[in-house]
Each structure stands twice: as C-alpha cells, then as structure tokens.
Amino acid sequence: MNHEPASPAGLTWPPLVRGTLIKRYKRFLADVILENGTTVTAHCPNTGSMTDCCEPGRPVYLSVHDNPKRKYPYTWELIQMPDSLVGVNTLVPNRLVKHAIRTDQVAPLRGYTEVRSEVQMGARSRVDLMLQDDDRGTCHVEIKNCTMVRDGLARFPDAVTTRGLKHLHELTAQLSERNRSVMFYLIQRMDAEEFRPADDIDPAYGKALRQAVARGVEILAYDVHIDLNEIRLNQHRPCRL
Image (cartoon, rainbow, N blue to C red):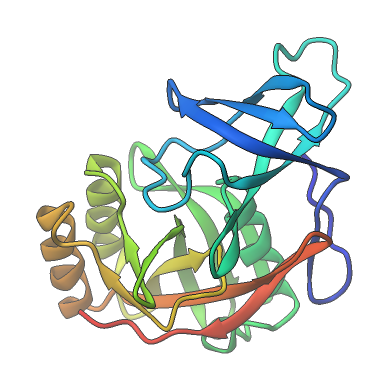
C-alpha cells in the first residue's frame, strides 16, 4: 500500500471505491457491498478492536490492488462515522508522522537532521522512528494509531495491549541526558478535542503511561484533516492523564 506524499502537507489516498460495510470479522477481513451491488471481502489492515469505527451499514472506502499474489485485492482504508471520516489503516500513521516531522509540521520534534524508521531499540525491539542530531542528540518516537473517540475524547488503547506496555517500558529505558523518548498518538479522525488513556479498557496501560511520563517520557497527540483525497496532520491536542 503506497500512500505517497501529495504535497508538503500530507499523503494522498490511492483511488478509492465506495461501499457499505456489512461486517468485520476475523480481525483482518471485512465484507462490503459496493455501489454496483457486488459483495467483496476486503483486507482490514487493523489488528485492534476498532471500537466506534466498524459499525455495519456505514459507508466505507476501499483501495484496489492488481497484485496477482494477493488473496484479497481490496483494502479497507476509511469509514464514514457521524462526525468524521476515520482512517482505519494502521500503516498510515507511521508514514504520515514521519512525513510531518521531515516537513517541520511537528514543532516539538523540529531540529533533527536525520529521521529513520524501524530502528533497533534495546535488545529485542525496534522503535517506529529515531531522530538524531549532533547537537540535540537522539529522540525515540513510538507511534500509536488512535481511532476511538467518544464525546470529543480520543482514547487509547481500544483493547488490552501487552505490546503497548512493552513499548512504554522500552521508551523509559532509553531516557538519558542525550536521549528523549516520545509516545506519539495519531488520531485518524477529526472529532477529538483531547486525548486520554482508556483506563476502563486497559487500566494497566494507563498506569504504565503515567509512570512513564513521570520518569520523563513525553506524550504528543495530534489529530488529522482527512478527506477522500488526502490525509494530513492537523492540530496538537491536549493530553489529560
């Protein structure tokens, strides 16, 4: 899936096909009725529960691929919720945030001369982005896709996440005078006013996030502007712990 930079602002979507969601199942699959009446099974590139963004009957938008090795030529990219389009593809946040940092759209992360993806962090893990500069040192950035919004509150995680806990511990372990660590929550929708951890879903994650922040891990949350042409970083949203 290629979401190429459209401009200095964001990433363009590939050509999209509109349909109506029948159901999502087995985590990675979704049945969709296209506008011509055909029912197709699309790949769902999202391992989360997708709480609040997988309601049957909603308009959805699929990309189409002609790779003969693919079992499912359609990929689910977007769903239209009452107050916003929502991006469901979890490959998008890393690409978008990397592009935004490189084009100086993220003020707290400006000034680094090198931005690399999937860099070794610790003995057994990789961090989504590593920013480096001779003067500023190193900044490790772990990016999380956030699609659950209720009453203007963006919340993460939408399911219990042992992997997310591991990332918090690893970011904390990297902290030093020359090493920053940042947890970046990318809200792939436009109806959030602020970010909070979903303590009712995963209290252990919320506790670990507060502990990480107390030890120096930084939190950033940004929403997006999203339409059927592109997705781009929008506003920094406050984080309430």
